[in-house]
Length: 68
Image: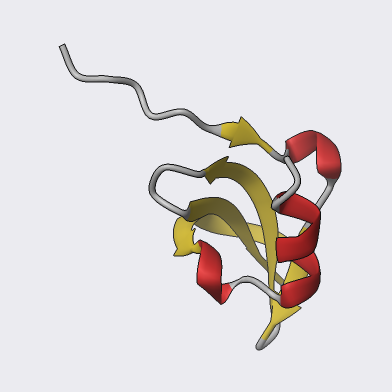
């Protein structure tokens, strides 16, 4: 059996950032893969869920997530 990847839910933290007119809301942090799952919103409408590398997050968000 494959191991489950450990994830840390970030929905309770209400962390988000805007970039190029798109708002990203952080959902889960995967420390083993150093990735973050985010929901994307354009013009107030949800456009999907993406996985971003942790390194692409703004520095202020990295500081809030890292102690978790």
